[in-house]
Every structure is written in structure tokens, then in C-alpha cells.
Amino acid sequence: MSAAVPPRVDPGRGLSLRVTSKTPAADGVVALTLTDPTGARLPDWTPGSHIDLILPSGESRQYSLCGDRWDAHTYRVGVLREPGGRGGSAWIHDELAVGDLVGIGGPRNRFGLVPSSRYLFVAGGIGITPLLPMIAAADRLGTDWRLVYGGRTRGSMAFIDELAGHRDRVSVLPQDEHGLLPLADLLAEVDADTRVYCCGPAPLLDAVDDACAHLPSQALRTERFAAREQGAPVRDTPFTVALGRTGTEVEVTPDITVLEAVRSAGVEVLSSCREGTCGTCETTVLAGDLDHRDSILDEDGRAAGDCMFVCVSRSRGDRLVLDL
Image (cartoon, rainbow, N blue to C red; front, side):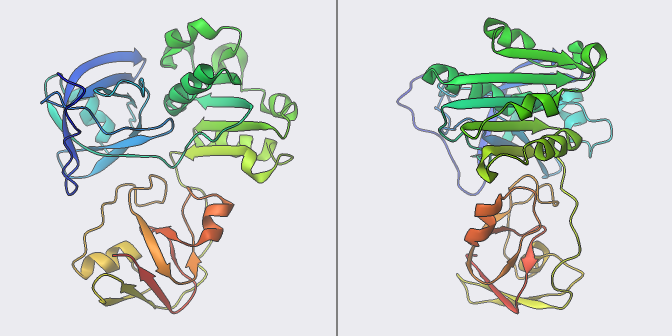
């Protein structure tokens, strides 16, 4: 194995990596480590990044990278079994084995760590995964940080052992021991110089969002596993999508998505969640007035108007031009 071997990337298909370990990380959570079967180094990533795991069905699921970002040859993800899910986590828990090859997309990062003099990390359950590399980065830089980590029970909370060296900065608060996280008190103490990063279930994110109302808009960064509630689209009539690379134009009627429309024109766009949370279908917008309906972009990202998630977002005007 040599660090000089470049990443083996097929732009059209991503990577095929080998599962080199699969270990319990908590009740209902397994940690997978993945390496390139040829020993090549893996594409670089930054704290907050996720990868796509390609299922046998061809669908993909997104999992945050939670290992050592300075280890150029190993990815690690934590996977929660979701009994009410679409089957991806069940396949990983029950079928995927050490030694198997699995397709990978990414890494991508829509939850990046911005520079700050102080961080407050708030994790709920498996939402700890993207925060672990952020904590490592903050600690390496000597930045002031604190983590508040909640979960149903202590046994359901993954990677607690890895936080043991930071006892003075970490509060582990299982719900069956301490009740719900004291967000109102916790966030009332946060000042405008602190960046708050939160990942976990939707009720936690909504509560943190409400409790951060007194902070500047850029103070809070969240990553959602489920879509926000959205009202009706701005437009209830057809619009045109022009594909900038070919000049092809397709009509998007109210009953189909932009993703479905461009696929009908023979253009394949990788997608996964189809609810505007994973970011897989992010597409560059060359012209048009967007009706953003995702749960990813913040106010600045929406105002920029230069990208959209075609599984859910639409047009306010008669025509969009996409870089497809």
C-alpha cells in the first residue's frame, strides 16, 4: 500500500470499495470501514462530508463520514438500522459483509465547518456522525468547543467511547436518564460569535432552530435526515427546462418533477432521497427564477440562485436553463 497511488475514480460510476470491518457501535448501529481493494488512496474529504452507498437495487443511501479525515486510505460510516426505512439500512445490517465490495459516490459536503472562534455541537442519536470529524478539527486547531449529545438511551448512542477524552467539553444526556435536551437554557447562553452545528432527528432540529432565533442567520448550521414541511409550489402551471449542453428543451408539468422531466429527455442525473435532503441531485442553474423546495440550502444559498435540487425544486418563471 502506498500513499503515492492516486485515487481510483471512475467519474461515471464512483468508487468500488471493500468492507474491511463491520462492528457494532451502539444498539442498532454498525460502523463500516471501507478501503480501496487496490490500496489506492481515497478522495479527500472535509468534516461534514457524506458518501453514497450504492445498494444492489441501484438506489443509494447517504452516510456521513465519521472517521479520521487525515487517513487517506480509509472511510468510516455509522449506519443506524431504520425499521421503518426503505430497506437500505436493513441490507447493510443483514447482508453486507466484511470482504464485500460496495459502490460509493462522493464524497460531497453540504454541511461544512466554517471558521469560528467557538463552536457548540448538538447531536441527536446517529446525528453524532458528521460532528465527530468537526470536533476533531476544532480540537486540532485549539478552538473552543462544546458538545451536547442526546439519545434515547446510553446504549443507543454511538461512539461515546471516542469522546471519553473530552469529558470537560462533552455532555452525554440520554433521554431516559435526563429527559429532553435543555435546549432553551443551553442556546440562550450562546453569543453571536459562536457557530452552532446540529444534526439529528427533525424535532431536535426544529427545536434548535427555534431556540437560535436570537442569533444571526449564519450562526446555526443543520443537517437534516428528513424533509422540512413545504407549502404548495409557487407555480401551478407548466414551465420549460432548457438543457444548456445540448439545447434540448422539456416541459415540466405540475404532476412531474424536474428530475423526471430531464430523465425523459435522456439525461441521467444521480439522485437518491427524492425529497430534497441528501443533495445527490444538485444541478447548476444557468438562468431562471427558482422555487427552492429543498431542506439543504440556507438563505444565502437560495439567494445565489445558481443551483437547485431537481428532485423537488421548481421554477417560478416560464423557463429554467440547467447545466445539463
